[in-house]
Image 1 (cartoon, helix red, strand yellow):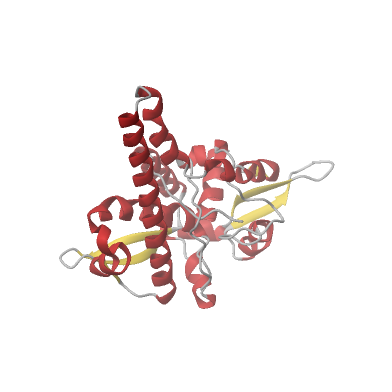
Image 2 (cartoon, one colour):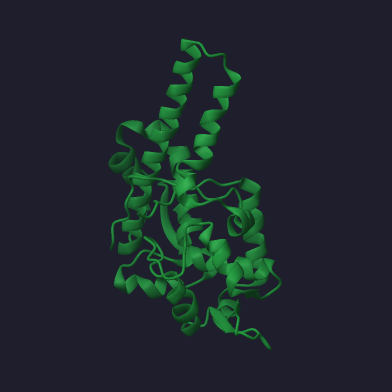
Length: 262
């Protein structure tokens, strides 16, 4: 399975709908929301040495949490590829090691990233031993189709596109899709470290799999194209499930840190 680079981190928008429509460029979002939170005290503290030291310590701590989140995320993606159950004890001893006190916040951030960027949910199957398995977000089986090749799961992008179609009224023109995805650092014709070549993915691979429909806008001259849900999307999930998912995302205002592409 390809190893995801973890030396640089970026943030997603606070909610899925905002992520689809209005997120700033990925390159400009380095440590995004966390950096914003860390920078707030700079304006509120007087410029003395003690307050500056406190601000520096807070920034360093947030950066350290981001690094731990990236390390845990890489560990979970490797586990996803092997289909192995995930033990909390293993996450603590192999990944967090001397930083186990920070496990709750690191685990929350990593699992939100798994869900939003990769389309994978963590489900606890043994509450006594704290054992987890990974299940597809919204019931989509797209990631299961990819497991044979040990590729990075890509269903998070599909959930984003299905949500965008739903928000737009069951169909959305191609220009708006790429305009929105470009705000997330995803561009047609340019290889992405998670999703590969996205235009081929959206207009060919997922169309052939039945998740999306890609067709010419009626009476458009020159020809313009639009995306709709495909029959497999309707079979595996529902508009209500996607709406509920978006409400859950909005309600908890998640942060997640997928690696930045070079």
